[in-house]
Every structure is written in structure tokens, then in C-alpha cells.
Length: 256
Image (cartoon, rainbow, N blue to C red; front, side):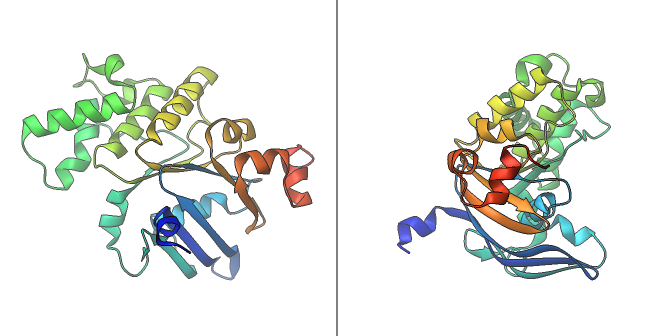
């Protein structure tokens, strides 16, 4: 592989097996995710897509009896051996299915991460907060109520706030676990537009049950079934000319 093509792989998963006790949740998964692209993980519930997503920033560390074989590489470095977990989670931000703003002001939600990493000056925090909210397409809606409680925002606004909170610590990768499943269609469209805008600067990995969403926003799609990655290709190929009949059956709605 040439140096140029190698440098494009932001995240690489190599022969990953993951166990919860004796149950094997991921089976020999290998795939490479390129920088500044959107990669979607699709498949029925319990297929391993969220489990794989959480290995990228070691969220599975929090689960008892979780054991991993294989490697997850970020810019060529093993996230389980070569990168401090706090550094990793600064570089790899995460959004969950249900928006989870902290019970504090909008401003303090965004400033929380930078403060944790040692930023104290109010002028610097002001700049970080504004830029993060602008980048998350929320600034114009909240700029006059930054001191108000973040939990008073609508569901869609709360999810964009969580994106802004992740952006405030200047990550390189954004992981999104079903980020729109709890949102109405208008809020969903805003998050999708935002995702397409953000991929100019970030590598994005999204887990979604919504196949139309995967088609709209992802460059590549991986289809999972029973812990196995059945197929990984360009999104167009996965949805129009998949190589595996199981993929074809899933994207055509024959099961799911």
C-alpha cells in the first residue's frame, strides 16, 4: 500500500473480536475508515454495530467482563495500547441516541470540556463556546440565552448542543450512535445537514437504523449481522449492487 493511500485511513479495525463474558458480540471485524468521510454502520438490533462504535473510543472499558482481541488504530496507533484513554476521548468525541446535556447552563455545557483540559481565561472560553455553537448550527438560536439551563432546549437543540460540546475540545473524529432516533423529521434533517457540513473537518462514524439516512449522508456503509461484518463498501454499492445476498435482503427490507 502506498504511503498516500495509507495516510487516508483515520481509523483502522484489525481482526477485532469482542466478548461479554462468554458471549461473542463481534467476530473478526476488519475495516478501514478514511479521514473526512462519513461511514455508516447498519444492521438489525443486536448485530454489533453500536458495540463496534464504542470500541473506537474505549467506551466498552466501562462494561464488566468485556474482553477484546485484535486492534483498533487511530492514525496508526493502537487505542488500547499506545494512546492514553483521556487523550483518546478528547480526539474522538461521541454523541448518543438520547441527547444528554449536563444540568447546567448552555455556556457551561460547552465550556466544560475545555475547562477540564485547563482552559481558564474567560475571553478564550467565550471564543470556544461561540465557535462550537456556530459550527453546530445552534448559535443563532441560543446566543441570547447562554446562561439559561440547557435542559430547557428542545430535543433537536439539545442534540446539536451535545455536538457543540464535543466540538469544543477540538476532536478529530465524531462517533454518532443513532443521533436522530429520538428526534422529529425537521430536527433529523438539521442533524443530517450538519453532519454533511462537519465532514469537511472531521471523520464521522454513525450508527443508524434508518437506511434512508445512511444513503443520504454516508460515503461508505458497513452492514452487520449477528456480530459479523457482512459487507463494507461505498454506500452506493451497498444499496444498489451489494455482493452478499444477506445485504441485499436487508436493504430491500426482507428482514430487519
